[in-house]
Each structure stands twice: as structure tokens, then as C-alpha cells.
Length: 296
Image: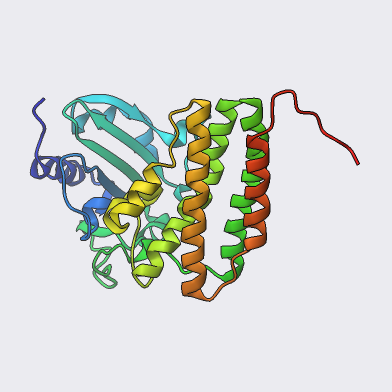
């Protein structure tokens, strides 16, 4: 596979804008605008065309073929099952995966909606074709808008509650050997609380002036090697024995990180939830399959 270079991709992006009078400016956000991200061959091009009107760009989606040979195209605003996120309201996106490995996520933004997008700290101007930013230029692109936020005491306790309450419910699924349900709950809900605590753990170590990345993208950069290895160990192979192991690894890691965060921020950690839930899970783990509930 021979891929087009960054210069070639940017050239075609700007060339298309130059030939179309309906395109007023070209912006870029995403990782290519982030000075703290190391460039590599798989970085997407997150591009915004500021346009006068969306209509001409929606009539025939085939116009995007000008950017190169497509492997597959996605138009989130045109989807029923997977609609776009609310912050994209009023815009239209063409997500373009090319056969040469390059990818352009192209968002068309009407001029009247522009302010909703330029608030992104990673947004930078590639070409101000019509002088839209002459009087109010955008600040230098940075990832400041993505820094992890210091939690309130209430948010910290909510995260702990979500983690421990869901683990209490997880135990019955393990006893029943409902492994699909258990692993979905473990990965979709419990891991969400664990990774939220991981963000705060990293934030505490970097003065909350750090971007851990979406879905833990930059955890390997900011976590100590031992902590990162422990996090990887919370993923299960899927069988019953290893799922039990992953559950306990997750519990131990959450406890350590929550304890650290609570100490650094001066918050209270609910040891009573921890002890009661872990005691209950340990009890369920040793229950025989013929166990019956005894009513007092």
C-alpha cells in the first residue's frame, strides 16, 4: 500500500476549498492540532469546512470522491441506528476512510453554527478564505480543553457508589455463569467507573493539567508501568475462572486508586461499601451450585 503524504492530503483539502465559493474557511481540530501528541502514520485529518449553506454539499454525497479512492464512507447525520452526538447539531459529517490508509473526518459547519465548534481548544485555522477570523483570531491550539477536571467530593462519591453497587449485582451473574452478561457489565459499567478514577488518579499526579485521552488513549504515557500492567490485568479472557480473576483485579485497583485520590483531595472514601460488597462477592464465589436462600 502506497499512502499519500500529509502534504498531499492537505493540498487536496485546500484545493477543494479554493474551487468552491461556498466554502468560507478551512479549520482543523483533533490530534493533528495537539502539540502534545506524537505524529504517526495513522493520524486522522479532522477537518472543518465552514460553509454558507449545507444544501449544495448534501444533494449528492459522491462529491467527496474528489478526496481519493474510498474504502468506506460514513455519514452519521444520515444514520438511524447510530445518530451523531448532540454537539454536532446543525452540522453534517462525511467520515472518509481511503484505500491508501488515510482518513479524513470532514465536518461541514454553516457559518451561523461556527461558534459551537471554534470553542474546541484544538481548533486551528488552516485557511481563512473569507477573513472570518481577522478581527477575532483563534488562540493557539492546545489540549487544555481536554484536561481532566478535578472532581467534587460528590462526584468522587458517586463514582465509588457506581462501582461498588454494580459489583454487588455482578456477583449473581458470576454464580449463574452468565458470562456474556457479566463481561458486558464489567466492561461497560464497572470499567467506566474504574477509568474515571484512573483519570482522577492521573490528574492528581499532574495537577489536573493533563489530558489522559478518550477511552484511556494516553494512559500508557501517564501511568507508572506497574499501574498500567495492573490495569491491563483487569481484562478477562472470557472464561469463568479468568473472569473471577479480572473482577478481583479490578476491585483491588479501584480501591488503591480511589484511596490515593481521596487522600490527595481530602475526600472520604467509603470503606463500608468496600468491605460489605467485597465480603458479599467473596461469599457468592464460594457458594455451591445447589445453594438455596435461607430465610430467617
